[in-house]
Image 1: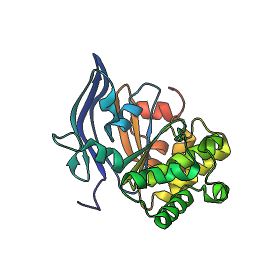
Image 2: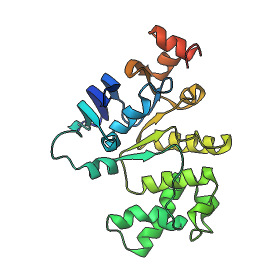
Image 3: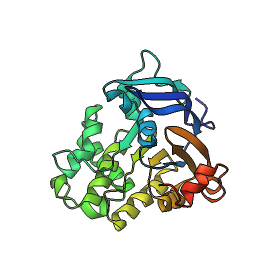
Image 4: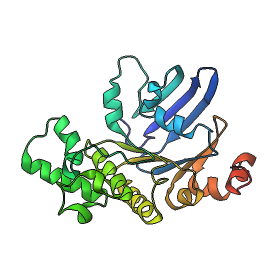
Length: 254
């Protein structure tokens, strides 16, 4: 495993839903321990590409996938790969928070218990550690046994982030992870991402250019299923090489 190389490498990746081509021949390297933003108009393939990184695209009926997605040099689409392990390594934060119907504590402890951690003290330490990493501990430490569904939407999203971190992934995939949140809650998720990139590769789909400018180290611009341009965020967002990227960044296409 080359820790200095790209974390995710996409090679000749195409995805069809029936006769519809959602992704066409995508090639890109996603840098390790950076925030990569996938941007582009609605329906351009952003979420499909993101979901290819943890094989959630597989769950769509009638999907056909060709090409390679290499995580640490291993093709996650090769025969015999353990898809459960792939999804453990590549945690997903969805648009809307979906806390489990249990307490705040049990939401975070769910994954560690599933993987064999049953020591009460170690579970307590793990729950606190991951809630702190998600920026939620100070708000909930005195009501850990309360139902997670009683939290605000922003708190629920940070709880889902903590729950994802608790299974010790290598990467965090965010599918418009702040789109259902108020501005203050969205900023807290953004702050958590900035802190977490020291130890995790983070890839987010966002339709908010301002968010990409605030967060991204690297940017992928998608248009009609094709990867039009990618590179360091400053270059792609401020001095794009491609006309379509320039038009999107200027707000001429949306």
